[in-house]
Length: 115
Image 1 (tube, one colour):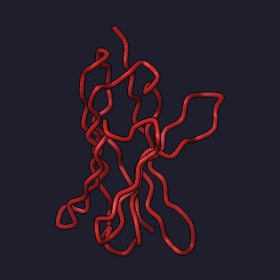
Image 2: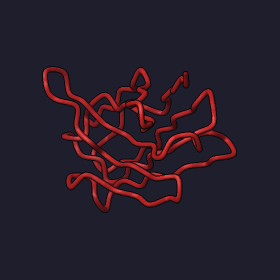
Image 3: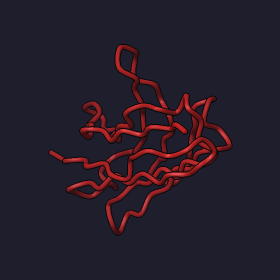
Image 4: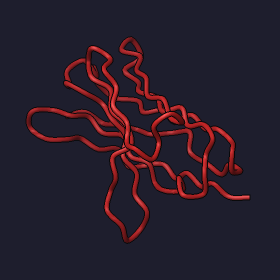
């Protein structure tokens, strides 16, 4: 069973950037895709971005053009570069690994966008 550990969250001013990392305990090539979701307390978990094993990417409408997902198979790590951050991007960001048996999830990292 894979363990996913997110890092890189924090406090940033509006318009700023952050880069999140998700380190997997095993090979991410064993999953057909990796992704990021985010959740505000009391609300549903929303899709942010995903990247397939052949590097096809997909983004949620609210982050399209601002966020970039990437992967480094050699390091078993997935990244989320977040630019032009807005207060409404404030949330807990979760890394996920897509498998045929269901998704694996990390513990989340808090991102707060505020002046």
